[in-house]
Length: 158
Image (tube, rainbow, N blue to C red; front, side):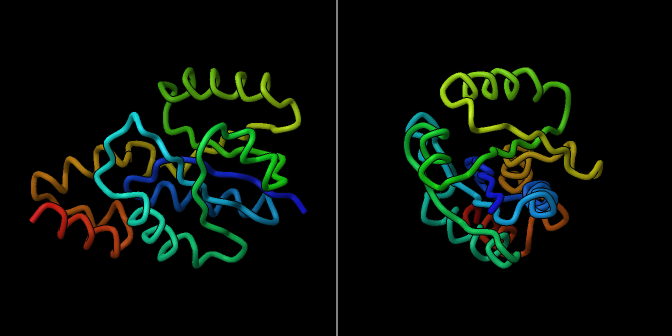
């Protein structure tokens, strides 16, 4: 079975994330959307909330599994018997960081490949950070995120 991990913080999941997941599903038999525990970040949504929003959205896609992980991504990939890590690239500015991470992951475990996927052009400007800022300022985010996420943002910023 060809299995891939799509890691991220998904704070919150956006239509761009979902587009990358759909693209990855065309290439792999199973995609595990993995929410990273990151003590250095201050997420808007708790890990439990992010997992729930992902299950409500991406979890409905065939052969997509939602999970969380702690520690090194390559160790999680090995434990899940995944041969690839999916990373979304929106712009050239994403590439340098993602390239560095891919090379480091290859150094840690040469059996895990990194696959870069670009979302549809209409999502290239989209990020969780921008979506949160628009929602915080009272803007309409319904075109950028699934309805359940828009509702969760609206409740958070009341």
